[in-house]
Image 1 (cartoon, rainbow, N blue to C red):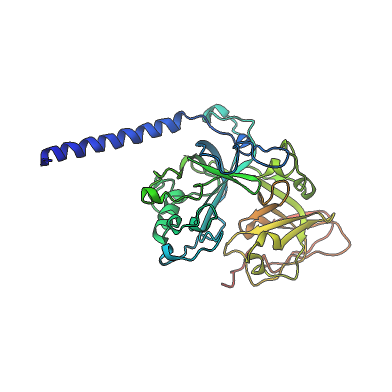
Image 2 (image 1 turned 90 degrees about the vertical axis):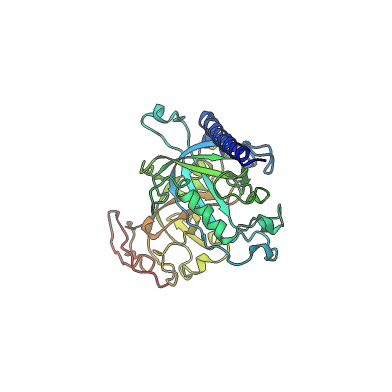
Length: 373
């Protein structure tokens, strides 16, 4: 091929890529929104009705939601040659996850949105997909560099945010997902545990299994947390009109609760299955599990404090008809309260303050002390 022919070929290929990219973008814009209500729909047994089976072919979706929990998992990458790692079933290495919640806009037409939507959805990805039983092949693992590039792509909305800025609570975003999987009671946006190694592991969002994030409105604002009782949360309702299924993936507030495990430390809560180790209970003895985020505001060496508090978080699930638990991103979500009872109540240690009171309920946000790590 002559140099002139090569130049013409290169130009035509470039034009072709631009047109293909534009066509893909146009297709995504014209695709109807999938509501969270539709995406999280279940049957009487708690299984998904959005997909015929947990591993059926990909179902592309376009979704809208406000970020109500930014990454609270441990994103630390496994270093070194991930292609030679021994199989370690379900060890995903670094993990990234956020929650987006359905919006209730005052002007639904502004976003062409269904104002009857409710609930929320998780967006998740992991580093070592090769450790998933569906794969069992290290080709599915992200190297530490590729993992960092993928995190940067998602957290900067494809590089559209100004330098140094990342996705934050209250951002209204649009998600375009090529696939997703149903797991432990929720339908999740993810990469189908596939890093697209057959395409050379692209980290620009062009992979067949990638999902992408676009900022619709920066600082749209957090939805108000729904005040819900633990007894209602632990009630399964397949219609999702009530109970934990209705509030799944959304901000909720528990009032007048306390820790059950007063003899454990927060460090205990960050071992395997941490959501099973920490629980709060209300004044009637109803309990709910917690998952505390990997955040420096928590002091891992402090034991569980005694006393009553209000608590805000995002409701998650680890089971088909049960297993609801509250994701608490940081210590600012605890609000000290005093409730009418014969004895004074005290909340110490975790929040670095003591607050005593009786009579009429009062509350204030905690002032934090530095964590010991």
